[in-house]
Length: 140
Image 1 (tube, rainbow, N blue to C red):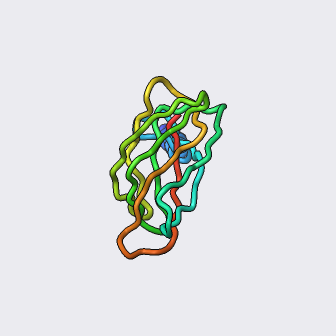
Image 2 (image 1 turned 60 degrees about the vertical axis):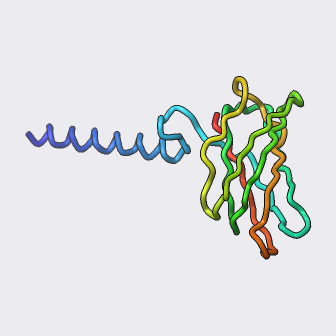
Image 3 (image 1 turned 120 degrees about the vertical axis):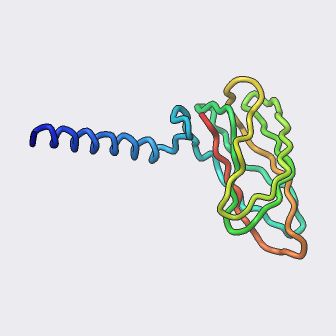
């Protein structure tokens, strides 16, 4: 009986380690894909409404991206994803990206693609002058 209890405890510990390893790797809800940090860009609301996140990840191929805001809210209007081969992908976002949150997964056209850069068009909140940081992640 005691040996059986020890086996149950060992199994529970092993299952817990596997689950925590999957969570630590940034896997999505299905557990079969991984979000990878692509880069961040400080965005300024003083006289500018466009910036780019330089990715240059030729080794990684991604089927979707998502954005996160730090430091302030950003009203994200549109994205233009430029792939490694130079082809563009226009993505209409139209989403108020709140500080600390991220967008839903934004699907990329075609198969998994290598990304050169992400061009962003955004808008500041009225009467706000300051900065925020927008970070992009790719789903591999």
